[in-house]
Length: 284
Image (cartoon, rainbow, N blue to C red; front, side, top):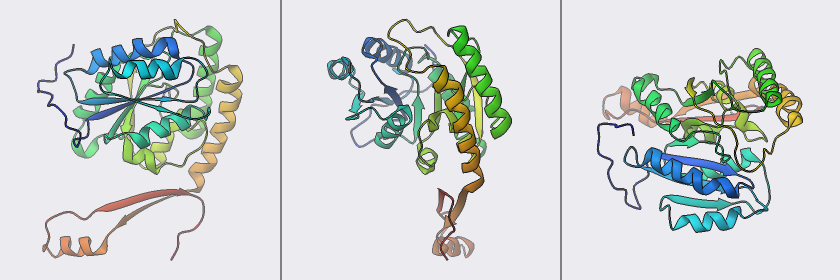
């Protein structure tokens, strides 16, 4: 296990964890307990964390498995959608519920390696405080998927990169670490989880990638086919391109705070309140 050279302090109920691990799942009853065990093994003693698993209206034994896991994994917080709303909606629900300023997310099928969360967090820590990326993305260098899935993903990534210029070789990788506050400013739409690097860059934030491990699915079945990953993905790319042209980004600061800062009456820096909204005009 990687050592951070520091002691992880015990967290009280009022103290937020250093990272919230958000895992959207749908009909992944067989994968949940092993995945939670791997997350625990990867992060225990390394960083203070919580795990939020969002059940997106599963029709199998997923809800009961999550309840059974609560007693074994004390840091687990299970959530459930009343109906299936999609992976992006499940991710958003988990981020809303998270108590940390930083989110780590991975897929619930067991193909992402939870041990790689440490590498993404290390990339964030290694950067100077004023140059720290707001999102660190995993890049699956050796994908363990069927050839048709790999080919469709490669085509979609090439088209996305050419149109959106997000400089992210594997935007669809579920393993990411990002700032919660930036995510909550982003516009919501179905499949947005596939475009987080581009959306963060539209918000004038930096995105970087880190090579990560990838594993074959050994239990359950994939919930995406060729249509979802390629053709629907191309339509989504065009929508994100339109959104990027219409999105407004405003950095707003409180004038009283700015005046005090300039007059040296208050040494505290003024607070900025960035907000994003698609389309429309600002009110006078």
